[in-house]
Image (cartoon, rainbow, N blue to C red; front, top):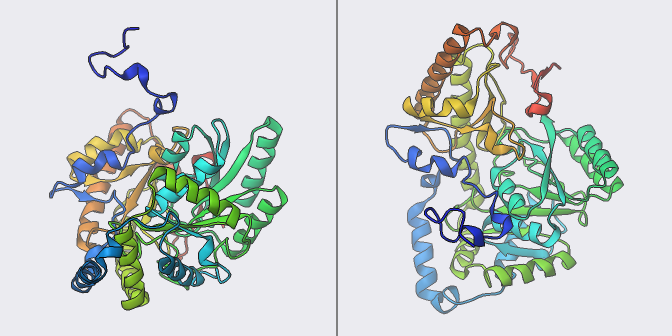
Length: 446
C-alpha cells in the first residue's frame, strides 16, 4: 500500500487510530510567540517561581544529592516516597481532607500524569466524560487520547450548575451513553476563574450519590485564594466516590513535576500498576526535594506570599479591564488562582483575532482550545500570574486597542451591534452573574 502522505510522513498509514485527532494545544502553539521580549503574554499559566527563596531551595537540593545521593538518584517505589505521601496528607488537611491515609496516595509526575492514569484505568473508547464548559485544555487532550467523548456542562459565576449536571446525566442515560465520571476544577477554575460555591459543592456530591457518578476533583489552585480560607474539598465530603488530584506546581515548583492522586485502595492498586507500566516510578530526586521542602521550609508562609503577589496582579488586570475594555466585553472576577475568562462583544472571534493581537505584541489563549466541540470562539483566557502589574496594564491596553479595531471593522459591515450589551460591573460596584459557557452565553442577572 502506498502511504497517503509519503512526502510529509512515510509512516502516516501506520499510526494508531487514536492519533488521528491529536493536535497542538492552543497554549503550546503560542510558546514561540510569548518568548519574544516585545510581547506581553497574558497567555501561559506559569507560576512566579522567582518569588521562591531560590538560594535556600538550591542549597536544600544540593545537600540532598551530596548527603543522600544513593537514595535520591536511585529508582523508587511506583507509589511514591512514603515520607512525601505523609506530607501530602498534611497539605490536603488544609482543605478539610483529614481522613486521608498515605497508603491511599499515589505520587505522580505532576497532576497531569495523575489525570492520564485515572482516565486509562476507567475509560474505554466511546465512554462519556462530563466536564465543565469550558474545561482545562490538558484534560481535554487526555480524554481525546483515550478516545472518550466529552459532554460539557455549563457554569456560571458560582461554578458548575447542579441542575445542568443532573440534566446531562438524564440525557446520557436516555441515550444509552456510559458516563464514566465527572471531571471538575472546583477552585479558581482553569480557564474560567470561577469557584464552585459551598451550597453547590454539597449538591454535586448529592447528585453523584444519587446517580452513582464518580467525580474526579482536580485542585491545583485550592490554596491560592485571595479572600477566604481554603474551601472544603469535594473529597472531604465523600471518600469513596471522589478521586482527588493535587499538585505542587502552583504552590512550589512546576519544574519538579510532582503531583498526586488520592483514591480508594482498590483504585490505588490499579493506578500503581498503570504507573509502573508507564514510567516505572516517579523521579526520586524531585520527590525527596518536595518532601525536604515541606519539612524544612516555611511553605505555608510561602503560599501566603504567592497569594499576595497574585492578588496584586489580579487587581491590576481587573482595574485595567474596567478602565479600557469597550462596551460589550464581559469577564469573570476571580477570587483566587491565575485566570480571567473574557467574553468578546457579539460577532468577534478570538481565534481569528489572534494574529492581529500578536502583531500588536500581546498574547492570549483563544477560547476554542477549552472546548471539545469546537465552540468558545467568542471567549479568551487571560492569565495574570506571570507578568508584573505594569506589564499586565500595558498588555490589557494593547488588547483593548485590538478589540476596538475589530469592532470598527465589523461595524463597517454592519455585522455587530454592541448597544445591547453591558459590561460586567454595575454602577453600584456589584458584579452581575455571568454564564461562562456558550450553551448559556446570555447574562443571568442576580
